Image (cartoon, rainbow over all chains, first blue to last red; front, top):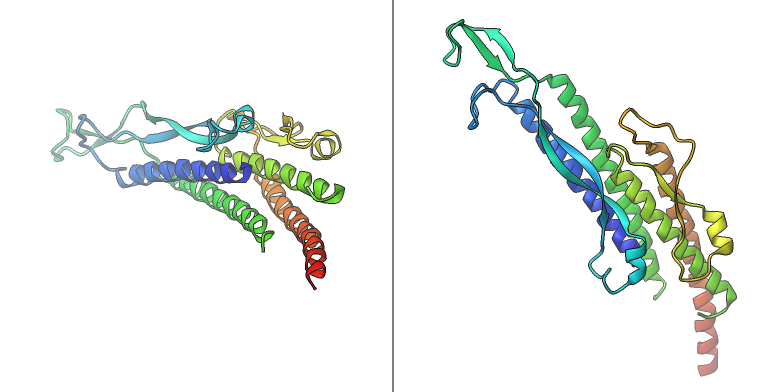
Length: 145
Length: 111
């Protein structure tokens, strides 16, 4: 049923926005982190979205679904910021280099906050779409009463 | 199924469902770089499409592209989302009254 696959499209959008929001929150939390497992300061992460066909589970049975698959979204990649870290002069800091400079993540919290608002709005949009589709499905079921 | 009117309503609901699926896809891809808004020519498909065929999906012209090549207009999509839901609501009520007419005819027979 085509309406059920519309719900999985909205679900894919919600999952993608959630992943993005998680990364943004992680960036804000680590905006002052100077040590990581890979060494060096924390690097800003961001999600790359790409559209992906959303096949419903029974699409193999219904050929028409395959001809016209619903376009969902997926996080195809998570990229790390490759820009130079910010150098701050703090000679007493345990991570300071020989000149007294400490490498801090190159993160602008305002940018992450703005993106977080965008992710939240995107999530809400997908919820609205899913609610509308769900209502349509329930109305079709009501026809049997 | 029952009569030509019910057939048309069924076809109308099928098209609305197909369109709602595209709107959901557009909203899900509102932040996908390079994604172009998809839609169907509703009037044309309703008049010409045979029942059971899949409608032709087109990219929508005249929408402003953002810097990342994405041209999803959230205002347009939310409007369509609400519009489709209302139309579907109307169609399902029409269909319900069609079904009730048949049901009443069956009940008359019993009495």
